[in-house]
Image (cartoon, rainbow, N blue to C red; front, side, top):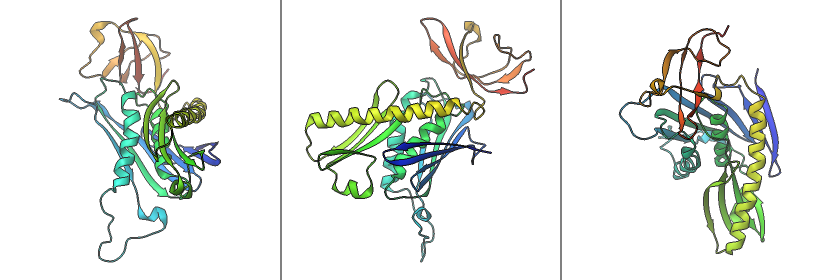
Length: 289
């Protein structure tokens, strides 16, 4: 049994299927935008990678010819390496999301986006951007989301949100804006010398539309408490219990929980030095009593 959530986005239906496929992933959604379908998953390793001083995030965007109804034939029957468009799409997904993970997070994280079908009027790249953010938000991976992304075109002096293929061909602007609840966090733009004020207006208009998508994600997230095993709250922890190097613990009896037993737990910690509070991300292995 899976759950489906829908909203109208730029005149087309955005549908999110949660729990339908990829149930072993930390978070997975099957995204439908018009007739475009993209499977988006977020997975993370159980333990941090040793000996690194960076966050090992990998973003994949896989295009397949069957998504547009073609099967490779002739001598080369296998599909080749990732296209330039696929590489640029990975970067656009990575850029707004990477800063929203904890700074000391060292677990390997992979965001996989597999294009299953393509509607030329509903961008699979945009669908993957939204799906990657939703999959990570509903997962047990520490992520300060949700975020949303909107594409803006300019046709006959009017803004067009998430333009179709025909609208892109005659558009004087190609703008992509990613936002959190509070602010714009990423802008990618190209234009035919549009006025500066018009570009600013387009950014604010995209940010406003992003807020509607974020509100939809927040509402959906509250309706699926069982999709992840994650518990998020704050609690005080004595300094000698903190292990920044490993970032995980076993057999700690967590005070303030409803459990009477000790569990194997995994903690991802972000530190707030002002009030000595630590945000905890735990996965409980066992049954609470």
